[in-house]
Image (cartoon, rainbow, N blue to C red; front, side, top):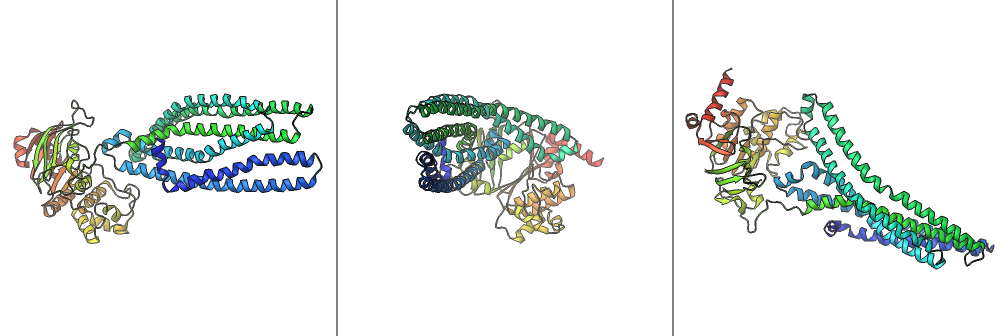
Amino acid sequence: MLKKLLSYVGRYKEEAVLAPVTILGEVAMEVLIPYVMASIIDKGIRLGNIKHVALMGTLMVAMALVSLFFGAVAGRFSAVAAVGFAKNLRGALFKKVQSFSFANVDKFSTASLTTRLTTDVNNIQMAFMMFIRTAVRAPMMMIFALIMAVNTNADLSLVFLCAIPVLGAAVALIMTKAHPRFKAMLTLYDGMNARVQENLVGIRTVKAFVREDYEKKKFTESTEQVRKAQVRAEKLVILTMPFMQFCMYASIIAILFFGGHMIANGGNMLTGDLTQFITYVGQILMSLMMLSFMFMMFVISRASLQRIYEVLTEESDIVSPENAVSEVMDGSVSFRNVSFSYFKDMNNLSLEKINLDIRSGETIGIIGGTGSSKTTLVQLIPRLYDVTEGEVLVGGRDVREYDLEALRNQVAMVLQKNVLFSGTIRENLKWGNSDASDEEIVEACKQACAHDFVMSFPDGYDQDLGQGGVNVSGGQKQRLCIARALLKKPKILIFDDSTSAVDTATDASIRKAFRENLSEVTTFIIAQRISSVQDADRIIVMDDGKIINVGTHEELLKTSDIYREVYESQQKGGDE
C-alpha cells in the first residue's frame, strides 16, 4: 500500500530526498553545539580563559546560524514535496473516479469519495511532510546525542537508557488502540459530508417545505457524532505527550541528582560535562517525543491511507475489452433475453427477459409507471451498466465488444436529472461537441427551442449560468441539455423524460424539429405524457421491469389496457 501511494511523489522526488539530507546538516550542528558549550564552561569560564570563551562563542553562533539555514531549507523542501505529493495523489484519485462505472460510484457513495479527496488526502499530506523531516531528524538526533552522551559519561547514560523501552512500549500500546477509533471517525465524516451535500443540493426543497430547523437538527446530530468519535480517538493520542514529558523530566531530575553527586565528590565529571549531558538527554528524549508524535500521525493517517488505497485499487467493472471495436456502424439496437439486477442477484431483477429489435433511424417511445425500469433499460445501451444476463447489441455488435469511448460518443443522453456546470451557456453546450461552430450551436438551440430565451439574456450565449445552472428555470435547463445532446450528432439519441418541465406547445415544437432533423438517428423518448411519444414509430409499454406491449399509438389504444388507461386519464385531465 505504501509503495503504491509513494509512487505518486512523482517529479517531487528531488525535494523529498533533499529535505532529509539538509536535515542531517541541521542535526549535526545541534549535536555539536552542546560540546562547544561545555568547552566554554570547563576550559573558558572555569579557567578564566576569555580568549577561549570568545573563540568558542563565535563558533557556537556560527554553528547556530548554519543549523538555522539547514532547518529553513529543509522546511521548504519538505513543504514543496508534501504539497506536490498531495496534488499528484488527489489528481490520481480524481482520474480514477472518472473511470468508475455507476456501480463503482454507488459502492463508495459520493460523500465518501469527497471525503477521501479532501480530508484523507490532507491527513496523508501532513503525515508525509512530517515523515520526510522527522523520520530522519529524530533517529539521527537520538543516535548522535546518545553517542555523545555515552562518550561524556557512560555510567550516567544508564538513567535514560532505562526510560527508552518504557516509552516505546507505551507508544506501541497507544498506536494499537487508536487506529480503529480514527477509522470509525472518518466513516462518520462521510456521513456528515453526505448530510451537507444532500442539503445543499436540495436547498430549494428544504426552504419550500420550511424544513430548515429539521435539517439543522440532523446536521447538529452528525457533527456531534463526529465530535464524540474524534474526542474518543484523540484522548488516547494526547496521553503520549504528558507521559513523554513525565519520563523526560524524571530522567533529568535523576541525572541532576547523580551528576551533582559526581561533581561534588570530585568524580570524573565537570560542570560543563553535566550541562552538556543534560542537553544531550533533552535531545534524546525530545527525539523520542518526535518519533512518538510521528507514529501517532501515522496512526491517524493510516485509516486515510487505507481509504485512498481502496479507491486507487478499485477496478471498474466496465472497461474496454482488448482489440475493442472502434466504430459503430449504425444506430440499430437489439435486446436479446436481457435481465438486469443492480445487486447482481437473479432473485432481485430490475429488468427481466427483455427481447426487442430496433431499426436504425427508428423513433421509440417508452411509457410506464414509476419503478417500471424505463431508465434502467436505456442505460444499458451506452453501457453505463452491464447486463446481468443476455446481451445488448448496437450496430449489430455486443456493447461489451466496443471501445467505451467509441460507443458513448455515438450515444447521446439527456438524463432525467438535467445537469449544467459552472460557466457560460456556450461552454456548457460545447460539452456535446468541443469543436462546434457558432452556427451549429445556434441551430441545435433552435431545434431544442432554446435560442429565443438564450438571446433574451444580456450576454446571450456568453451568459454565465452559475453553479449547476441556477440562473435558468427547469424548462430552460432541459432545453439546453437537449441542445447539448444534439450537438454531439450521435447515431443514437436518448431522452429520459427530458421535456417534463416544458409546456405542451414547446414540447410539440421540439418533437416537430426532431422529426424534421433526426430522421436518420435512432431516438428513444421516455415520457410520462402520451402526447410526447404518440408520433413515435413504435411505443413500448413497460411494467415491473417487463415489456407488456409494443406498437403504434393507434395499435396500443386497442390492445393495451395500461396505455389506454393512461391516455384516457390524461385526456380527461386536459379537458378539465
